[in-house]
Image 1: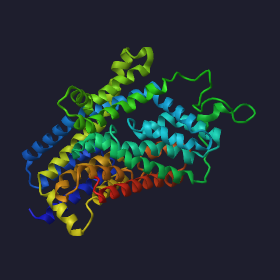
Image 2: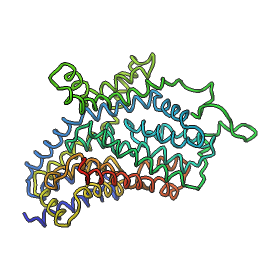
Image 3: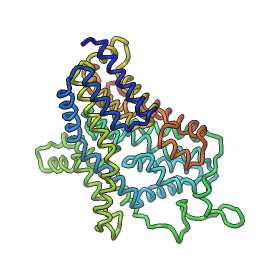
Image 4: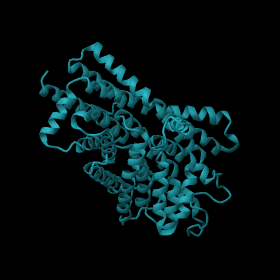
Length: 458
């Protein structure tokens, strides 16, 4: 089978994948399965071998990342329903008051965006942000996108977001390294995007349903309160700040200790063994879930918390699990055919820097399909078999995929519509704010990745 045929088949498969999802709205899991199966047959694998490779790739990927995604989704659901996310936001607003309030939104969104996807973060906190916009006379064209972009960047680059979890597993990247370097890239990217959003001059009022209760009969803005959208008498119970932050950062700290400290103190002694065990990503995320139980107060041991909430997390995990498994099957098909070598040879012949390729692949998939999770995961699946031939590390590919998967949000994205609609913006205003901010965050992040790669740090 010629290299030309292999490359054409591979290119056609990617084009059809994007077409089915973007134009014909076929479910991504079904689309990926169709593409993986067709590609295996088209490249001469035969029916039995194709199914064998699909099963192998799906099973191996689920074995390495399945429980991580489940526990990550459960943890996010616990933070959402316990009020911890609102508590973190309230604390940030106390630190960054007045004209600095937009940075409070960015900080809160970034922290909450580690375990929660951006859409959920917006749905939870848009009432709080709308009240803040009303009280400070700040445009929702600034605050709404800032709320979205913090979580969006973090969930594109840092586990336990489902996209980064899947990508790190497919690429064999240590989870501690993914978290550390993901943060190094994500924080400046968010700062650049927020600075841009703060330059927007167009004023957009918050939606009346979020702030109507703040307008007294005389029409003047109501005063008082912490900006959470409720009167003092109606303010719901919030867990303590430190209790809210523990489930977010405890798993991160445990995983980082396992990645960087165990080798220093030695895995053979008791302390090293304990750190290695509790810092194993699956155990660390489960410990994070356990540490979130006190957030529910006296209800922590009730069925609604220990059973029903876990089931809610499982339902949330179903889509990322299926996508990740089929993505693993795609990587296996590519690895076991001549596609990887042919594509690697083509990239070298064109003189492209290898680090640019995963960025462009992820950017294309995200921009066309509207999903950053699909962008980072699919790009990682495509690039994993090429890593050795291109002489590029899994970590570098991971970071390039995570930055490319931020470009760019527009009208085909659920997050775009959620943020635009709830922020009372038009589509054009959404593109000027969310679209450009996401493109800036992705480009900024990739510039950092390119520099890190050039200096041999990743």
